Image (cartoon, rainbow, N blue to C red; front, side, top):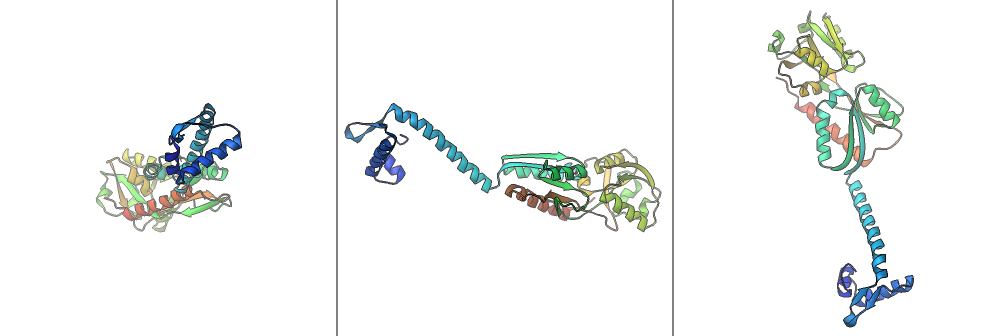
Length: 290
C-alpha cells in the first residue's frame, strides 16, 4: 500500500513479484479477510478493510521506529535526564558554561542544575534527588562515591587601589594588621587559610565572615577588607575594582564530584562526570592572574 503496486513492493523488499503475491495470499488466509481487489494487468486495489488495518499497522511501525531511534540516542548518550547539584563556587561560572556545551551536543537531554551548599548537595545525592553533585568537604560516606577534582590554588582578593595590588605575589606577612574577610569555618578553604596565617604567626584584623567567596569578593569591592577566595569565583567575578594575586606558599582548593554508591552511573552521567573532570583540569592548567 505504501509503494503503490506489486512491482515496486518487490523492489523495496528485495524479493520477487511472485513472492509478494504469495505473502498477500498468506496474509488474507490468516486473517480471513480480502485485502486487495485484483484488477486487470495484475494491479491491486486495497479494500476498505485493508485501509482500516493499514492505519493500525502504520501506527505501530511509527512506534517501533521511535523505539529504535530512542535506543540509538541512548547508545549515543544524547537523551535522558540528569539532575546536578553544585556548591556555589562552581555554579557561578565554570559549571554553567560546561553544562551549556554539554547540552548543545545533546539537545534532547533534560538537565537540571542547582546551586546549593555542599551539605545540601550531599543530602540530595544520598536521597536520590540529584544524580551528580559537586561538593567541598573531602568526606567519606557509605552511600557516596567521591571523585576528587584537580587541585587549584586559592588567590588573594584586594581592591585595585590597595597598596598590595602593586605586588605580583602575596605572602602571609602582607596581610598583617589588614582587615580580613573570612570564608565560614565549615569549608576546607577556611581551615587552610587559618593554617596559612598560623604557620607565619601573622595577626589579621578579622572582619566580616561569609560562606560564599562571591560575597567575599563583593565586600572587597566595597572596601570592607581583603580576602582569600577560590579561583573559580575569582575567574567569574567581573568587578574591575577587585584584583586577584597568587599566594606563596600556595593554598590548594580541591572540590569533589559525588555520585550514589547504591546505583551505577548511566552512560550519560558517566560522560558528564568525565567531561567535568576534564574541564576543571583544563581550568587548573590555564590559571593566570594579572
